[in-house]
Length: 137
Image 1 (cartoon, rainbow, N blue to C red):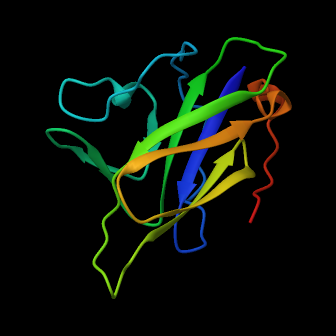
Image 2: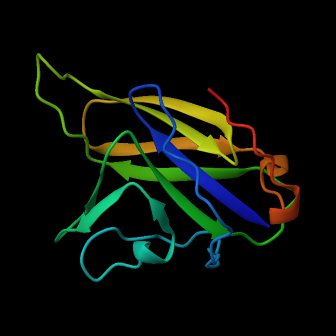
């Protein structure tokens, strides 16, 4: 089972990847760190800047993570601590759309650092061979 997780802004998805990447395994309950000394590089696919001391910025209109998941018959909740680049009043928040395997699961208006969550239905987690090439808007 795998999950392709896409975070987008500006109403556009990041470009699709060309070939099947290597999937690293994510264990339920595991925290993934995006700062120096963290392990987010195992899951980052596209749209990420270089790793900084405590975080990694997204770069461009979207960013993707990809990983294998253990099989489950239950929904899974994604939790992400986000720190947006904002500059009120011109840029009061960052709109973020969250996609799991091409289907939208959440829309967040990220205006301050915080933990954001989205439920991933169990049927969104599929094997690579069953992956649809369609993209949700």
